[in-house]
Image (cartoon, rainbow, N blue to C red; front, side):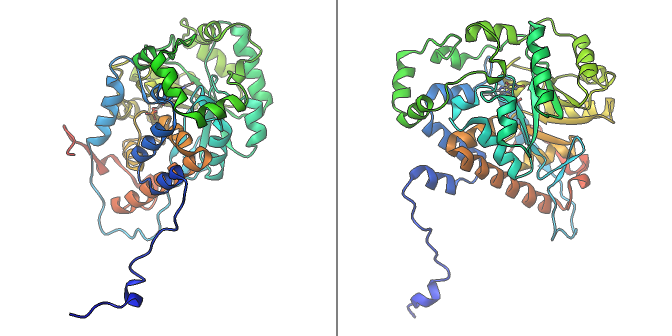
Length: 404
Ligand SMILES: Cc1cc2nc3c(=O)[nH]c(=O)nc-3n(C[C@H](O)[C@H](O)[C@H](O)COP(=O)(O)O)c2cc1C
């Protein structure tokens, strides 16, 4: 037997340049959203991770939507030249690099001090939509200044105190946003058991275990204490404690008349998020909204709510001309492709971009985008499509049970 010479092996064995920082090393190796979630969990206090990761009630809606994505079976088109694959599409007529946008999330600078500006700048660099929440921790004006070229939308909660909403819509318009996304699944806040158990309530009543766990994350604590204090930047002019503010942010008496009012008031594009039935989708299509997002708020509001992927075909059949997006439980580029095949224009993620941020600030969010891009383009090629318009319901079958 001949002993191989080093010169022959050198090309086969390549070592990574060693990096000292374990977080950077873990991020470099991450191959899935699940891997990024694990890094986020490691580097964030438990209560903050649970606030992000958790949902309402028994967390059934979230589990069911993830389960349904796992039930997707793909049926590829064969013998198609897929040497060039284009993962871009349009959201509200504007070209985006991937069919995955970053949905609105409140409290973002609590997850990681770099907050919305970091996520939005990664979105802009990759030509993706970023949606700033009414409960965001960066104001619409500051975000616009930090990321002037981003495709940024503003998510609106209509407040009990209508003067808050009127002022906010004026400010968002003056700051130059062209798209407003109204969320309608939040007449009141959902009951999130993890937050109650951790004491992450309003006002916070941190349990000793939660406080000790926070102390075990000195980097997070240091960054939180040495950067701008956390606040709902869009609602700064509103008086009162956080609890009083939150109780005014959601209006339990919201009706279709408010959507009609907003449609008349807002000259830009209007998207309605939190649609959970064919009846609501049909009612909204008559008000002239530009798009709807089928969403149960990632399971954080009504537990046991309908699952957007399941609802999608019936909604498309009832309002075929509507531009429809879905969100909830998306953890793989393949999930986005399944949704598009069943009629969605695109999808949004919430937790996934927060996990990216928690795992490594802007670098973590960029890693997430890289993973999604790789998944989308590879799966498109394997499905035998070169652009997203070629996906049809024939590419997807929903199996009764997932095979692991
Ligand atoms: C921590 C967190 C905060 C959120 N805050 C808001 C919000 O302020 N406004 C809103 O419309 N949706 C909010 N959402 C819901 C997301 O926009 C989105 O509907 C949901 O996260 C999608 O599910 P996914 O996280 O499984 O991707 C939030 C979600 C999370 C996880």
